[in-house]
Image 1 (cartoon, rainbow, N blue to C red):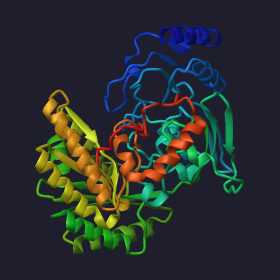
Image 2 (image 1 turned 120 degrees about the vertical axis):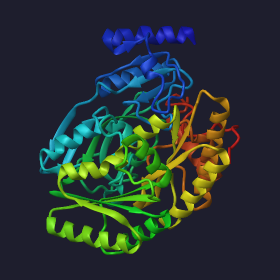
Image 3 (image 1 turned 90 degrees about the vertical axis):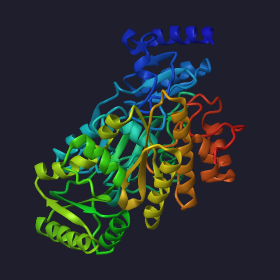
Length: 467
């Protein structure tokens, strides 16, 4: 291994400027937002697809694993170099190559931050809807790797619905250019979809062509508190069947509200059983006002109280403050936490939250639940102290039980965070033996040496399942 590393370093030094190759002080590239431990053997920061292809060919010639990394905001351990190897950071590939306003497309390098792209296209009257919580830091390449979503997925869909084309470097250094700028494509197998959500295990996405839509001119937001989650669920059902589709429909349960109250102060009523946030967007402010007024009445009919509607940016930001403070509130409440990402049918949300409450009671750990009420994507947040072996073990057991509950209720493992390192023990149960076999065959076809992000997504063949 040491000889291979030395050979790789020497070959890379012959092809790249010194500032693109790092062999010391590698701690910033050792983990992602999960804080799972890892240790790369070296870090490379290419600036073009050609440079990525060169790096991959050199690494493949010496059988050195390659872990592609965006900005490290993932919460499933997907960018952790758990088995060492070469971390391929795409942070320098951060150029918006083209915004074609007439065609309503944007061509970007993988390291472009999602929030930067949104600001750039909105300045042109266009809109890129996917909005992960970490949009100020996360990258388009990372979004593609996990098929990221966000609150607006209810109305607008997730990342895969906006990818028209991509450039991909395969495990042997070959470069594929898939799709293009056309909004309709029906030419053979849609191979680009194979790489979306593959978490860097099948190829390295270096450039992406994205579909844009017209920017909505107005947004308005409603918040409503409820005495119970059941009442909130009934109100959500009524809103979704009332003839309009909200842009976002978010949930915070009682435990989450208590944590946020401790963080923010008295602006969060402690007696609430749940908080629902409803957002509408469009180009007719009177119509938006009418839709939210109807939603307010439907919420009130199910026991909703402290109902507020805001249409200006400052007031809307105030209403969203509770939801956007959840991560910080949890950081303040516990030394460590694990962000789960389960999806259940919308009709089973109340049952799923009740199961999570029971799991919290059984394990003795606080578990808050927030998420995207409109599409059933829930984020149970397990608070614990990773330095305490007993608490860490109970957190792992809580995760196992949460995943099992989601599957029992007809749901699945992930809606937007991916499988990565943390959820791979559960994949076999979630997808079944035949599907897992096919996934492994695809992996062997595209990456026969298992060099691309090894130890992620797919469980080892001899690994026992945890469900």
